[in-house]
Amino acid sequence: MAATIISNIFGVLNQTLLIYSYILIIRVLLTWFPNLDWTNPILSNISAITDPYLNMFRGIIPPLGGLDISPILAFLVLNLSTSLINNIRFAFLNSSLLNY
View 1: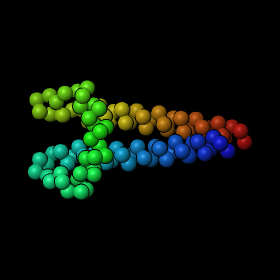
View 2: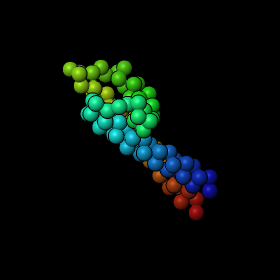
View 3: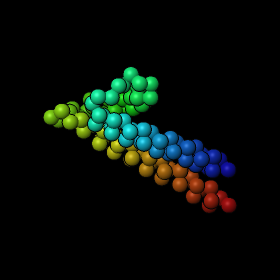
View 4: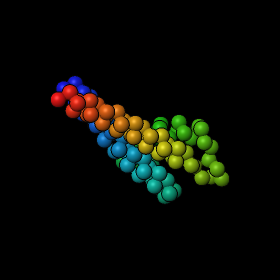
């Protein structure tokens, strides 16, 4: 029973990271349009949600020739985290199935 609850918690965390990755994709695509008004509440909220995460990687990888490639590393870390959470989730599911 407890393993199922923990598995469900990891499932919710996995879905949250999936939604965050979609928001991150939107943020990266929006950078292609330099004339956007970032004071727009929707755009400023997207920026407020994603910029702290992206700034961690901007400190590691500086822009090369004006091109910011830090989102590539950010997506890689996000995908690895999602895979790890999925593996933990299914391990808990398997352990709860073995108990029956």
